[in-house]
Length: 234
View 1 (cartoon, one colour):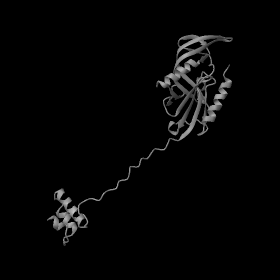
View 2 (cartoon, rainbow, N blue to C red; view 1 turned 90 degrees about the horizontal axis):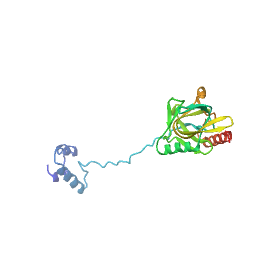
View 3 (cartoon, one colour; view 1 turned 90 degrees about the vertical axis):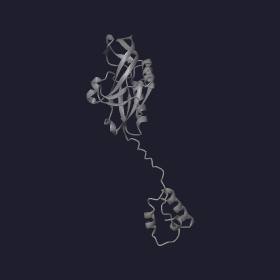
View 4 (tube, one colour; view 1 turned 120 degrees about the vertical axis):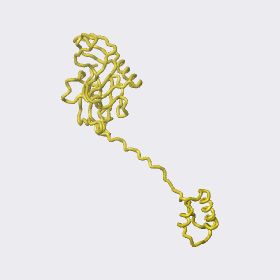
């Protein structure tokens, strides 16, 4: 079967021509189609161009924020307590230099965790994008933690806060009612969110977190900061 026969009028159906030439070399079939195009006849072998649309990239929806916990970690003076390297049982205060050391650790990616009680389940870390922090000169570390439905910790009201830390340096200062231990450097291990049944585990009475609905975190955080500043002894 010649190219001329395939490109001129004849009684053989096009399907039969395709069947007879299905094993023909590719160059021969291409020549047949090219000749048929020149004569205004439909091609027999060339596939129709497939128009492909650009791939559709489906971006996942941003996670839904159930609540935002606005908290202050360990402001003011603690209840009397002891630490491993100090035999005195006395209240303590975390000095600004210690909090600046915590800020340096976070920037150096030495992160701490946020837990459901001391030794409980880890809810987040200071590396998470849903955790925001700030060092305030008067109250120390303040934070905001967006709680997602996946966190399974949708605390509807206020809760107490406690910290787990390793003192690296401290000193004693005498006050009218005795000594106060001043923590000048520390390594923060975790911030514990204390439910009502766990409140006895907190050493700092002013350490607290308040729950904010979506869109209300800034107002709740500002109010907590003001209340804490007013309550911290001069």
